[in-house]
Length: 488
Image (cartoon, rainbow, N blue to C red; front, side, top):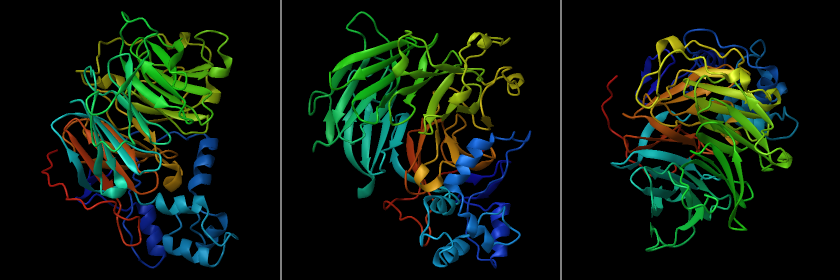
């Protein structure tokens, strides 16, 4: 189900049109195509995002300037598919084809808001759900020790059902290697397990049907125990980076099969880590100390000293996602906001992050205090702040939308209120809110090439949202439609 930012249901199929798109289609003669709403969120106006990220986003998702000439007097409106096709046939770009930005301009207007269709349904809470880099595989991790890998190209058939070894509490994170041959999984333990995804065995029972090799991150001190919240493969597949409950970042060398680095990174749990770009030199981290930090591995002469600190969240950070350019990233925070950061604006001073909260609050079992919702950090260095979703009870994740089909024009996130929210990066508008689940949506994932998004929830449902239509991206499986009563 789709609702506008004001909470009005558009229709049960989950798609709608924005006013700009209606005007654009009327200008084209009334050939209506259902597209996503771009209603702005209620409340205070969204502050202007800095010109550079606006320009970069528009360069990736805006049509060729000459195509605007086809819409005289309406240059500010999206160029319709009919006009885009006419422009391509007339070779307005001078290339005889769509550029990548032209493609994104077309595809980014069609959001995955139809549905949902059921991928899987279990009695266990879903904690992790991610497409592989090429979209051919999908990984879902559940609290009840199971991790399932689905073959998307073969009708979402379960390719491997992994029963995790020595699980403590839940599967906290998973990561596929770049070549998609191996998967690592973590829990509240210093041992990370690695599984051969490419083997022919479907039922992967730890050390019964397959070996789940344990990678010990505890510096050979068996008495020292901690949990791992976040793990990522490097882009070359040679290393793992992990964030832990002992306030540290760990780097594991897979070729040498040993721990290569431990950084005492924060003063509280490190909930999330990621590599900034393909080089692997920069690492971003986010912690319950409310700080995001940037680490440059080329400058580790000063032990445990970050390259810079980014201050602005009022509560702990639950997740980070890099734009992949070594410059911008987003963070989800327990202060109920997503923030967009430019690392060129980082600081070396953390003293400005002194706590000034005058109320008791714990996100694990309390609602966020109403009096805190409009607070702003006096030293907030973020580029933009996005509000509307809810970050409670669990480490809810947020992401940039795919570069290939949207030009990273959107940010999307799970939410404690059982929904998925999609924001426009530049305008801050809530362009879609997806309703189906009955428990928190901890993770969600947008297909890298098609308008398909999968959400997973503590209600045990893993469901798929799409934008199918004539001439659009093909449906990836034969599904049965989820039938459910909605109660608001």
